[in-house]
Amino acid sequence: MTARIIDGKAIAAELRAAVAARVASLPFTPGLAVVVVGDDPASAVYVRSKDRAAREAGIAAHTIRLPGDTPEVLLLAEIARLNADPDVDGILVQLPLPPHIDTDGVIEAIDPAKDVDGFHPLNVGALASGHPALVPCTPAGVMKLLHHVGVQLAGARALVLGRSSIVGRPMARLLLAADATVTVAHRSTRDLPAECRRAEILIAATGRPEMVRGDWIGEGATVIDVGINRLPDGRLVGDVNFAECAERAGAITPVPGGVGPMTIACLLENTVDAAVRRRA
Image (cartoon, rainbow, N blue to C red):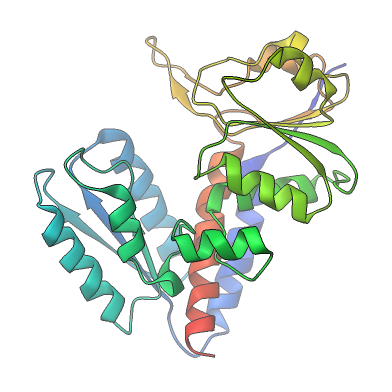
């Protein structure tokens, strides 16, 4: 079997166009503030992509850049200023933060109504309870990919490989809300390949390059690769060995060009949702 390639770039472009049309219909301009601490090269590339996508959608985007040695108290003061700014509807603090800063404390300082990353404990709790919430962008993007390609979620056996608070756990909650039968696997899972082979939907979010091999995939499964890893030779690869897994999967996302573009598109959608809710 040769898998259908799920074109995340094309699907994200459709979503971004829909967001832009929605923004054009509003009587106000949504505002997004991105806070960057330090000069991590990977973060810089990602932030530029976010900024460009927001402006193309008609969102007023601006980036606050702070030195890597910025004291935590000054970062919290900047967040407080953005919380109070009526023109800012979404606040995103680019992760990872420098080690001297308490990441959890910074996330908790963001106004939950402006938390477009969906990481604040109140948004996490709302998602877990099945209440309306700003949902983390990557899991939200994965759900849109699955719906777009017509994957039947109700009753399907889904395996989420990874249990991070950013991807794995919210991903599992979204799949449960869609009536999938969900397993969360991690480093302590016994016979991980066998668990993967049972899945009709496999979502890999481990941060380990090409960890998932072809013989881990059940015939015809849908494989969503959240990972993005740069190898010593400069190549970008996911958490899935694409060539091997594509021989067995029914559908699969590439890296790059799969989940990544959807994450940015869902950030734009979250920003507009936050803007509309704040003014309701």
